[in-house]
Image 1: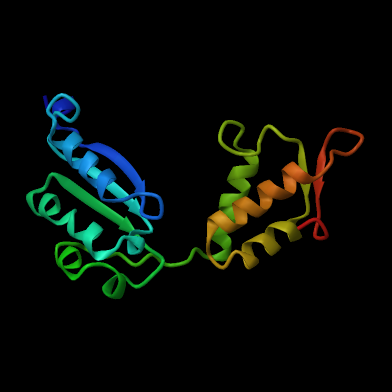
Image 2 (image 1 turned 45 degrees about the horizontal axis):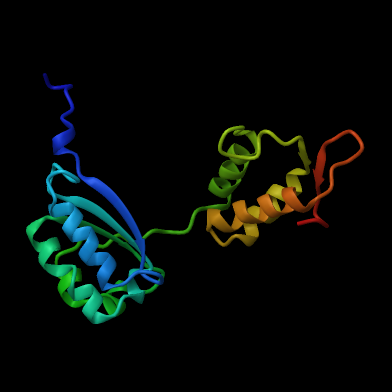
Length: 173
């Protein structure tokens, strides 16, 4: 059956942050990936945020398992990976440079956050001017996290009006 999905073929997913992780964490991920009870597929997708913060020894610890396919490595960095990430890892990688979002894209994300009741701010009664969306879209420099965090902070720190709504204006932003 072409639509069938076999769990034993699925790679696990693990996220580490290089600021708070070390070689012991990498070794635990490798051991778990090689344990057929924990990871039937025998491989894991490992996302390492701030990978440039790992030193050479920490990056070297990943290399054998990246080479043999036990680890499918996704590393995120705000630095130039060609200068900050081990050359051996770079040579076995495909590097994607992500571009900043446009102001229109940021605006759409903010509108979605305002409407989404389960994962956004949709359960609040928020009233805001279009100018607020323009300001947030502009000051975020293409980073949706900055815009979303600023909007959330404005909402949770602004006292509701008499009617229960939360009014966000230029002064609050």
